[in-house]
Length: 215
Image (cartoon, rainbow, N blue to C red):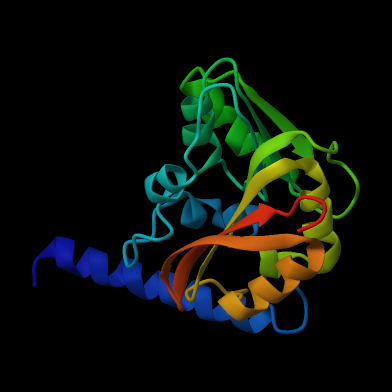
């Protein structure tokens, strides 16, 4: 076996070990990805296209000037390309509960000279978001890490403009994986309706539209 093949096999084994350990540790408590593991979430998953930054961003149908919430942004894997898509007249709010993740996201933005990002240290459901501000919101393998998912989704619903879209991405490899049925149930209770679905039952992106009055 070539040295590169050994290296790849070892890396895959390490990722699996970390994933299993993280999943076991998360059975009692919802544990967000530790800052020291940010390198893992900065990588596009090699096993599925669904979780890749470019694919998620393409599905969002972003336009210049839009305002987007990257909730649980981590080290900014989605934040940077979304900010580049909405352009200098648009805004991305990068929200995360861990200052170390925001620090890394800020460093990455500075490295590529992206200046249209606002960094907010807060958790979803804590009332940090303005009402009727956002055209899009993204939750990428984050929902299961939130202790009060109902409050989080209600806050996002209030923060979106009428007709705004919440994009939820989940993959089975994540320790806090949420099934489509679970996400749909929680989202409908918060006032969303399903608009689009991409992927399959173990790796998917679900688009949820903010219902308007009377729907």
